[in-house]
Length: 91
Image (cartoon, rainbow, N blue to C red; front, side, top):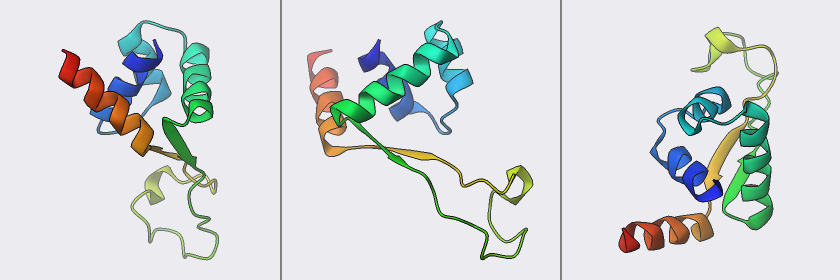
């Protein structure tokens, strides 16, 4: 499931654990564990996002979604990209 999760993350325009859980037909809790494992294995990097408390409200692209909490973003690492390239070459 981890490889499929990484593929879905790579193909997604917007990463939503709920959407990924639906696509993979798995519970959200399992997808959350998958993210943690991909981070632990070095295939995915987590960025807690920037703190927007210094910006006036409404000045960022996520203002309509803002709850004063930084947005968490994910980046596929070099190691993750290499795995994806290897998988695509094998298919």
